[in-house]
Each structure stands twice: as C-alpha cells, then as structure tokens.
Amino acid sequence: MATRLEMANEVVFHIGNNANHLAQAKLWVDRAYFEVQGSRIFRETQATATVATVIGTVDYALATDFYAILDVKNTTRVKRMTQRSILGFDKLPAATSTAPTDYAIFGTRLYVYPTPDAIYTLTYRYRKNLAALADGDNHLLSSPWTQVIVMRAAAMGFDYLNEIERAQAARVAARSAAAMISDPLTEDLIDRNEPTSVVGLVGQ
Image (cartoon, rainbow, N blue to C red; front, side, top):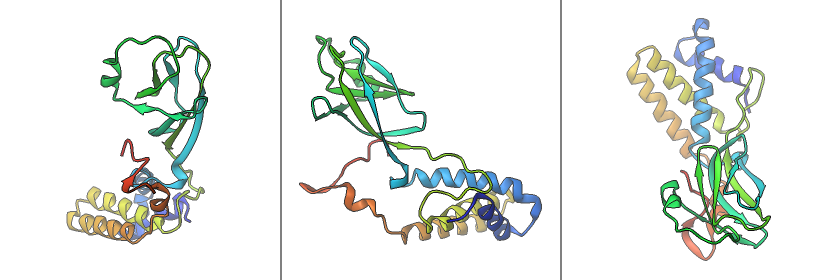
C-alpha cells in the first residue's frame, strides 16, 4: 500500500523532481485513483444495501457512495429482479400493485415496477466509490495497483508539462502494469452454468 502523499511524491520524481508540482500531483493521484477504480470490479469497491419498500411508492434513495448497479434481488420473494433502462422502464404498461419484478436506476434513485402492494425487502449489490484520500491515507486497493495509479498520474503530469511522448510512455507503462495484475474476481463472477458469461458487469 501507499499513501496519497507517497504516491504524489513519486509522481513528482517521475516528472522532474520539482517540489512545486506536489500540490498538483496530489490531484493527479486523486484522478488516477478514481479511474483505476472504474477499470475493474474490485472486491474493495463492492457493497450491498437493502431497501424496504413502501406501499404505493416506486422510487427509493440509493447509498451515498453508489457508483453503478450490479444486481437487485427481491429477498422477500427470493427472486432476482430484471433491470430496465429508465426509458424502457417508463414504457412498461400500467400494472396492478404487486411484488416488484423490475427496476431502473436514474440519478441517485432506484425505481421499481410494479408499484409495491406491501413491504418487500430489496437487496441491491453495487459498485461504490471509495472515499477520497487524505495525504496520510493508504489507498484501499491491493498493493500492485500502486504503480498503476502512480503511472497514470505521471501521465497527467507529463500532459501538464506538454511532454506528449513521455505522457504516452507513462500510459503504456500503466496499462502494462495493470495487465500483469491477476484479477481475483474473475472466478467469482463466472456463472458456472454459463462458462463464457460474466455476471455483475452492468454499468461497465
């Protein structure tokens, strides 16, 4: 692991060892950290939350750290719900209030269909945004990702300095380092009945 400050100092070293760039390097590290989180579904970025439906209510607030939905299950009926786009959701026909079977995400709200006729427990699995780092905070991904974050941030620094070739080289180094990191979630996400399918990638 490495702290935000340690990674920023390494970025400064890569782009010319000018301490005047340290404040900017921290921002580049922040951006790179966010980008890396979006590049795969990490165990560290997965979470679950529950919603208790209200009779006659179709939309519910999502978790404050919500980034992308993975799936939603009506745990009262022990059934996975079907995802719809918000446009497709709006076109669903009117239905008598009953247990929700479909859902859509819009902004920070979870919409369910049909309108609940009782209290149901919905559990949704989602990808979350990891909290922003303070200078002394270690990033929360596994250690090998430190180099990927640093090189992505260094590429931003080279862009800032208008050193286009070095920026491209840093991006290549970041991609190469990422490609060398094994993905422990690969096996977790394989549907054993559908060997070629990967579940949980909605929103990627």
